[in-house]
Image 1 (cartoon, rainbow, N blue to C red):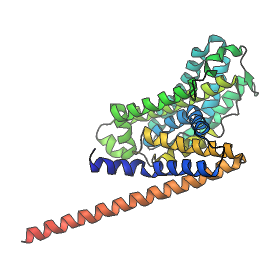
Image 2 (image 1 turned 90 degrees about the horizontal axis):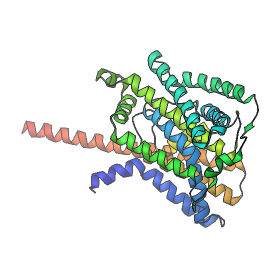
Image 3 (image 1 turned 45 degrees about the vertical axis):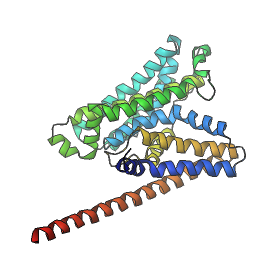
Image 4 (image 1 turned 120 degrees about the horizontal axis):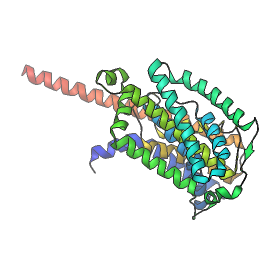
Length: 333
């Protein structure tokens, strides 16, 4: 591994990795009940819901957009999955995920064709999908007719559950998709410089449709798994999912301006949020403490990342000026 590679990794993940290690050490020293097993289980448990949802949101952020509808999308998918529970576990999950995929693709097409902000479209979807979930559930929580259907989701292998393993698989697939496929590279291009990408022939409509389709599918999968695991669905549930997913992406290092970030950033963000939540639970702290700690960490990480990026940019500028000055003096000689 070259020094340049190490430097790039440090700039991309150094702040987040440092914050994660510092958090674990601090909580291990100050919270007696914060043990290794409880911290790992609490953190991994968050991967199943927040991790899957954050994976989808990250794709839209890398594309230079933001999907605000994932909370309602997850709630609607959960209702669909519970309604379809009599068909079996796998068909129920598939139908819930497909529901998110279809609505996500529709959002992406609207945003690409109309060329309007994703915030406008997805806020409308957030409200509309919530209404559809209320209609399908008759404005009340609904439960499975046969709870035994979801018994496979209740299994546990040490600290791992089927939902956790699904979340890990989604994050791995996200990393492969973004790093090694043409579609992933096109999403980066669209998010980094949309007009230039359009001029270069990058299919902007297809990239945005794919990004929002993936976001919808991830939200649908997360909502379906969570509701089936609990045996019921609340059409007003998942109101905090958007905030958690976006926080994980931003804390992890996904750029809100597009074109920057990957699956490793998402993993780091989810792990940091998971450790905070596990620490608060172990300490018996009120619920609002987790929110306050998350907000403070978000400001801290974003601020540190800004300072690091600014420092690197200034160094590069000085180096470029030095090279230009040397070339100028050499030309005069």
